[in-house]
Amino acid sequence: MSLQQWYKNGWLKPHKTTPSQISELWDIAERDLKDARTARLSADWQFGIAYNAALKLCAILLYAEGFRADKNLAHYRTLQALVLILGKDRQDDADYLDTCRVKRNTAEYDLVGQISDDEAAELIQFAEELKTDVLNWLSSNRPNLTPKS
Image (cartoon, rainbow, N blue to C red; front, side, top):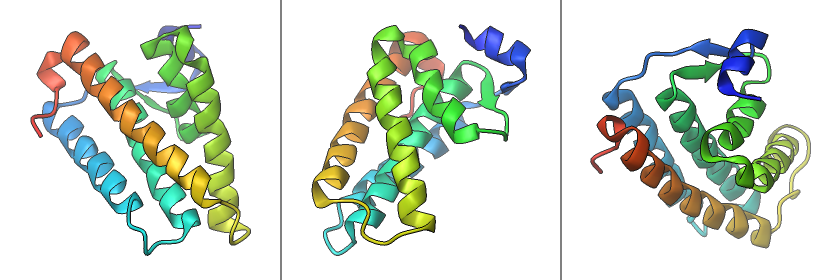
């Protein structure tokens, strides 16, 4: 599939982004990654904050391509768009992030203590690496949207 096919299916909406909007989302991701590393927080919260950073990074890619996810399954589609934008070799990453989405929902809405310290650290590290990949992609494909920070 492609982003255009997703659009035709009604899963995406057109979105005209601006450099300032990308910079604002970038700042949120950076703040969240910094906050996720706060040792005083529970693993559940560290994980949730790192998840939000990864979600924002995926949203940056989708916005840069001229789309936003429809409200129905917005997180899922935003994460899965990673494959359509960065390439099929990122399917494992999209699947990992979807697993994190489900775990984050359980930890936030249903049960305390669902996330281990190792799981939180792993997601923080993943999001840090994704941040580098997103910055490189923006620099190569949408240099006018590359954050200045």
